[in-house]
Structures are given as structure tokens and as C-alpha cells.
Image (cartoon, rainbow, N blue to C red; front, top):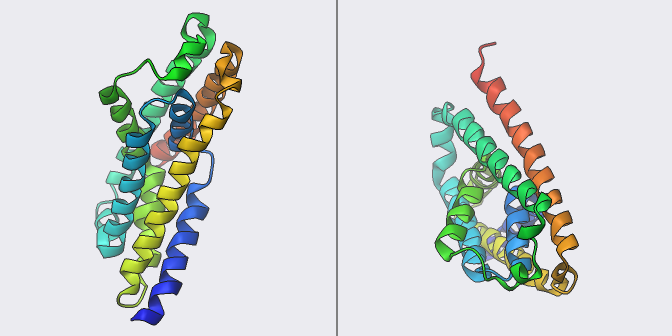
Length: 214
């Protein structure tokens, strides 16, 4: 039992970290909240907890549910695409509107916690890649761990997610002097909007290909 703990823990940690360290909608959102210094802790805690729970569900068999109900995949994909398109439009509107780019935005005097958390939930749970990565891929690997190795695998995966999101949210503060200038926010919002648009287009293509008859 003890001999399986470390290998399973390491496998869960490495696999989750390798999948999560990539440019994506959720990472871009956490980065922006970190730069704004706005509700960073609850955002990081929710993202980390959601990842841990999704991996746990995958390990205990949630992947089988999605396999038996394949219709859920295109529905989640199209919902995620619509959300990303909407957020891309908001980001580009901020980038093109100088009035929304005052340096005071970096101090976190803006959005209420309820609104930020609603966005966090959407970025996390409306992103089909989250389910593919955590529930299906990571969950499938974790389900193959022997005995207590399953729990060790989930713990390693959870630690990787928590460490990454904490680094992303807190480390962004080091860039605060740069983003005290409106021009930097303009470029950031333009980049975020572009990433969201590309990801939304890719998801929409996947969803349509799954929904249209062949």
C-alpha cells in the first residue's frame, strides 16, 4: 500500500501539471484577476477545488457516464464556445474603450465578488476541455492505479492544480507596475480577447461536427 503511494502521487502531479500549464481561457482569466488584484484567493481556491473534484469523479467512474451519454459532449462544447465568444467581445470592448482602462482598475476596485465568481464558474465548468482533461484523461489514468494509489493520484493532481493556480494568481502581482499604464491593459485585453475568440472558434467547430449528420 505504501509502495504505491509515491509513484501514483508523482504520476497524478506530473500528468495534471503537464495538462494545465497551457494557454487557455481559464488560465487567462486567473491571470487577469491576479493583475487586477481582485478576488484572487476565492478564484484560485475555486479553480483548484473544481479540478480536484473533477479528477476524483473521473477516477471513481464519471468518465463512464459521459461515455454512455455522448450527447452531452457536443452540448457542453457549444455552450463553452458561446461563452468564450461573449467574453472575447467584452475583452475587445475594454481594449477599444480608453475609458475602461484607467490604472485604478489594477487596484481591484471594480467587479463584485458574485460577478467574478460567476465568471470563474463559467470558465471552469463550461469549458469542455476541462472535462476531457480532468474527468476522462486524468481520471482514466488514475482509475488504473492500484489500491490506495487512487487516492494518492488524486492528491498529486490536486496539489499540481492548486500550486499552478496559486502561482498564476499571486505571481501576476509582480507585473503590477507594468499594468499601471492603460496601454498595457489595452494589449492584455486584446490578447485575452484574441485567445478567447480562437478557442471559441475551435470549440464551435468541434461542436458542429459532432451535431451535424455525417
